[in-house]
Image 1 (cartoon, rainbow, N blue to C red):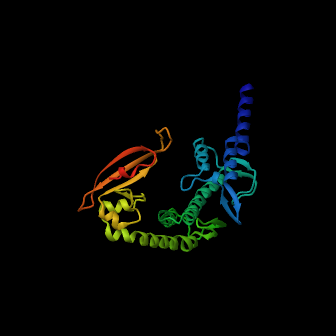
Image 2: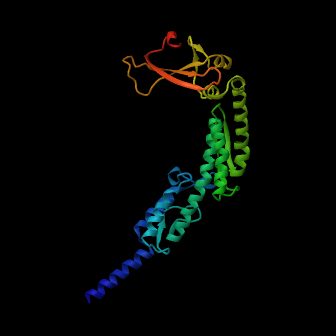
Image 3: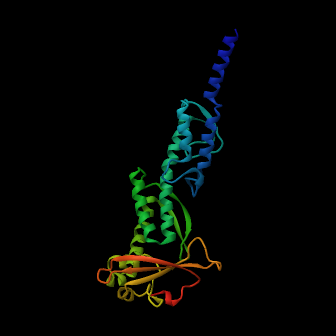
Length: 281
């Protein structure tokens, strides 16, 4: 009799778990409630609910539950509406489908962040990333017609821009013209250097360092002076400060071959304060 009662109780608990009260499924439901938000009339994702092009947080929960052989019919209550599902009991199968949708929309959001970064930075690398990001999510199966909720974003030079619409429209409106604009501006800045420098000297001149020349002469803004000199200098403050006055500065000296512009060697010397003009020789 006790054995029959125990088997009956076990069957009852199993049925109860499969029907409505399986706690691990609550974690998945909560994750989806955290992931989905309404923004500008579009179902969108919170920052806590996605990880760009990586699998979203809900996916690990799904994978762990699949390993337990959880039945697709197992249900748990959803506290709030999410994309495609109203608050109330839903099955594991429905939660898995929602997590798949989170992964899909994560890709859309990832591209929208590439657009924002390109608009804000007005940097050639980020503008190129904007274009590459679009191509990447399209290859991953995202439709060009997917919508990004409208929002205002600040521009680095002041003012703002309205970001929203289909991802295809965002690329056409922002990525392509921004890349051309920034590339043209960079080409214009580099033209004087490319006209008189070559090889390692050209690469060094375009590296972003503020170059000085013998006698502590400013060379960064003078391509012709850089071309005429084979010894260049730049200063840098190290992350660790070893000077008592707290003003550690490293002076780097680069030497180039006169005829080929080939980089030959670099030396460095530490100063506690601004290096004197006599150090630039």
